[in-house]
Amino acid sequence: MMTQTIRPRILLIEDDPAMVQMIQMGLRYVGFEVLVAANGSDGLDQAYAQQPDLVLLDWMLPGLDGLTVCRRLRQMSSAPIVMLTARDAVDDRVQGLDAGADDYIVKPVHLEELAARLRARLRHLTPASEQNTLTFADLALDLDLREAARGSGRITLTATEFSLLHYLLRHPRQVLTKDTLLEVVWGYDSGNANLVEQYVRSLRRKLGEPPLIHTVRGMGYVLREEA
Image (cartoon, rainbow, N blue to C red):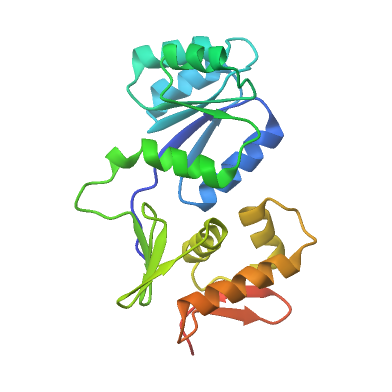
């Protein structure tokens, strides 16, 4: 049976609907709870009411700009603040950090890196005695070390293999289409099924026997024990 740690609550303050959809979907798939505010005023209200574990804050917002929101957030909360912006000059980064931000991520956003940076900022939420690990059957995936183990053997994964296995472990015994995996792991809408097949083959080889990732013909893949 699969076990998992608490779901950290992220408040995303971002006014670009496409960016919101991508980040919200991506972070939810890897285990975060995501609240959304489309402007600074709403973001401050939600931060006060919902007490998120972390705030992911866009710099360029309608009304109150991100720096102003950051300063006000820091007055009301000790939650980590991660600035999200296309501004990558050193002076901009310094302004963001001086305003109270804990980290600074430059757009375009890579979901794997974003999730890893957020996990790093949220490690204090996980008790020291509790490993941030997903398990299924005799397979375990350590989210901090970013490696897997099966039985007594440890398995080294590439970044993409880790993301693919992570998503499969979040959805055990559920058939996942190639298009879904392409969208979640690679950010593609469709059209590159061979890429999914290649990485599934690689994961199967590394995970060994008995197989845990099974092909559902004409549909996709499922993580389950052998029948």
